[in-house]
Amino acid sequence: MRHPAVIPSLLVVALPLAAAAQTRGSRCDVRREAVRELDATSLSGVLVHAQSGTLEVTGGEADVLRVHAVICASDAGMADASRLVVEERRGAAWIETDLPDGGGWDRDYARMDLVVEMPGRLAADIRDGSGAISVRAIAGVHIDDGSGDIRVEDVDGPVELDDGSGGIRISGAASVELEDGSGSIEIADVRGPVRILEDGSGEIVIRDITGDVIIEEDGSGSIGVAGVGGDFIVRDDSSGSVSHSGVQGRVLLPRGR
Image (cartoon, rainbow, N blue to C red; front, side):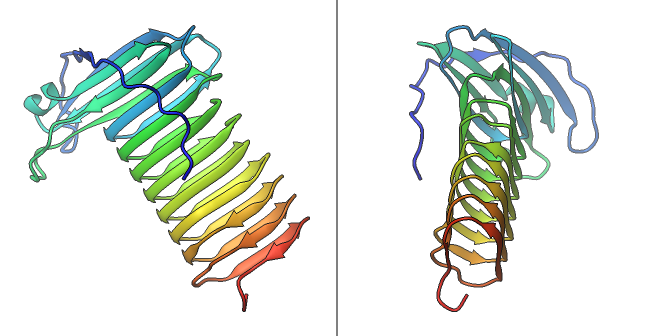
């Protein structure tokens, strides 16, 4: 998959987390919070490296990048070992979570939920381990995700996804290119082309696309397409029904479809 320019590696500066802790049920025995801000006047991009936890990225008009982190951990030791990194170098921002290994025991855990508020004029490059991801109202996004649902809305530029598992929902983008292991895919209101490089399994629903819709390889699951301004092409499809309506260009399907 094509990737956007990588933001250069940045000097890591670990920032201490707030010390207040409180009991919040069996899966959030210790809770801590931290808030960090960067002046975003000269920022040219944002890179997020997140491990376990949810991630919400929202664009706005302010020239400030703000990160709100919430840690849930099994005990104070796991919480103390969890680190949030927020830094800037040569106009690029880096946000990273560093969580301790629970050692394979269910009773030892740590996760960090992030809410990132950034200027909407910027694009984000996200590398995520597990947990739901929500992205809204930014200039563009590339996501490399292990597992968890992904929702992307109102992106001015391209959306690029490489996803292991979990549902994907995209509404509003200049173009979409994705590769998915498993999970449903829903794509709507794209002002340019949509290209699915590979999909392992899960239903695909695509509608209201200005450009071409091209599915290079689909494993299993139905495909439904409606309202396409360009061509609709499926190059390889193993199983599942294929339906289409309102395609202005060519329709090319595998033999027998």
